[in-house]
Image 1 (cartoon, helix red, strand yellow):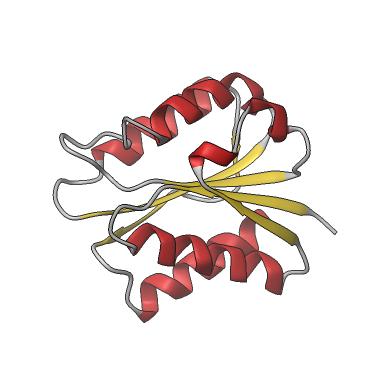
Image 2 (cartoon, one colour):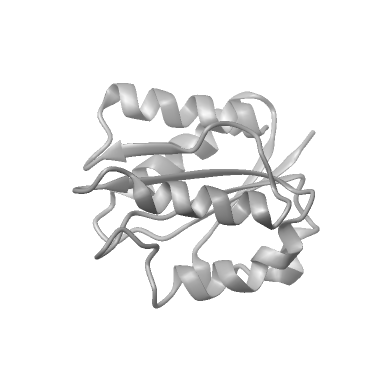
Length: 140
């Protein structure tokens, strides 16, 4: 059984709904899943998991949330080399630049993306939640 971490920040609940669906998908594939807020996850925890799904919405000028999520992610990034990860998040404007930048940062650090990053506009609908569950299955 694989052990999966789902680490996310959500301001409006949209990314939280996505995180819950990602966790459901991984559990459906038989994975043991733990969810974390950025405050509860750090580089020391990375090795305990077979894979990690990170979720963060686009903020401001299409960047990751800067007060809680970005500092945590910067701290764990060096530990992600060779680690299977997935990226997801919601947005309300823009064209997904924050996700493309985030994906490039992860690839440059040597992380292995288990699936294409997933972005959902605003609140995830049934199709968006199904895509999140599929992402969870892919990372499991």
